[in-house]
Image 1 (cartoon, one colour):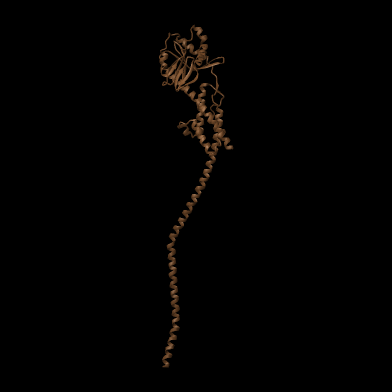
Image 2 (image 1 turned 120 degrees about the vertical axis):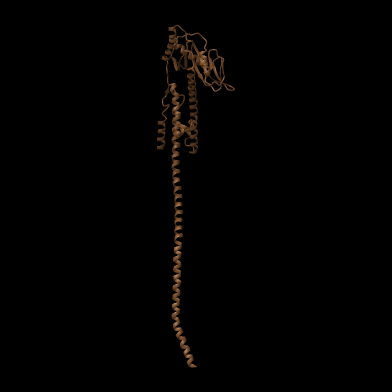
Length: 377
């Protein structure tokens, strides 16, 4: 239990991203990406986490597999992750798509030939009414508010400003007309005093740019302009109208907008603390079991290794004895033959001596019998 607690604390310390309650919009994306990367590195060896294109879904698969092997000891924690990770990735994907779209706009604005000034990601407010302007392009003829969209299917904007994606059916996403009208209001409110000083109106063009050049755009709203990303530079250069603002006035407009910026921190769209806590608990429990299993495997391995070693030693000992017996057997056999032959010789000599001794009296006794026989004749 202590090892689980220590491992949990260590993992929580490592997962420092997304620890604050609120973030600026431009910082939220980086924090979420860092949290994703830390979780992946805590799950896999750093070499694999760095070189392979692993995702949090790979982490989920890994945890579910280990949990299955460990008899579902971390079910309650993995269940939370199964619900939170897809939501995390959905929000992260939206922000990455938005960031990529804004980056494309910047690259395309660079090739605009007419005079222009560029402002990115400016947040304006009028009391409780707030709005973020992705891109503002100031030209002598107009001030363009550019909103980037990156849909995967054909894009439709109806007369009321409703924004749809079409993929065999109409999927309503939001009312982009209201959203763009609010951005126009905040921009004009910000420039109202400056426009009064120079005696001119703010000519604001609301332009929605589609980052996906392969899809079709159908726009039925006369107050909103649309174009694909590849056409953006040409749309700005070819905008019809007379020059309204001098270079100095364009610069004053830019300064006024930048000075009016009112950044605010917002809560993350995910419950980062819940993700971190449940991931750390699941990892601590499953890794503890892994350690125990490894220890058990090591013990079994040592026993098996010793058993094999003992068997090998026994075989080696028997082999040595066999070789020794084979080396000594001729000597023993020779000694045995020598003893056997020596014994037989001794017995033979003893028997001959006995017979020789017994022959003497037998010979004398036979001689006396013969002498007596001849005397009687």
